[in-house]
Length: 129
Image 1 (tube, rainbow, N blue to C red):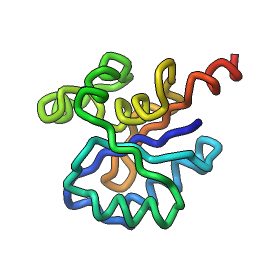
Image 2 (image 1 turned 45 degrees about the vertical axis):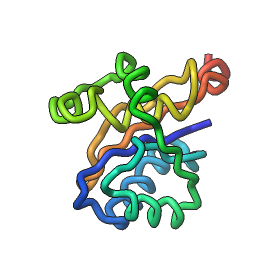
Image 3 (image 1 turned 180 degrees about the vertical axis):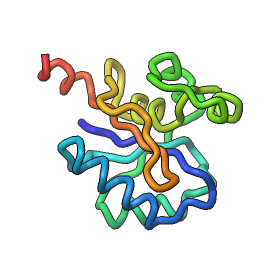
């Protein structure tokens, strides 16, 4: 399973998110199986529209799930640490949604004002070894 984690400011548009999702899937062998972010994001309407266009289910990750995968984040944003307690919402959300034993294949990157990262499930990690 491949999950794209996503974070964004409230001003991000569905078009911004769709472009970021498309780019990540083309760079990393998409299609993805889901897009994940924290529960109750301010950009929920834009994400819902972008995910529907890409035919991706949305997995909303709880604060506890984010924080549990926080130590596994490869990058660290001071803003993310201050606001959400993790180095990268995109990375932590992707890892949490991909499940226990999952791994990042694409650390956090910013595409058009949207922060995205990709994680794969333990089964895919093991298959790659």
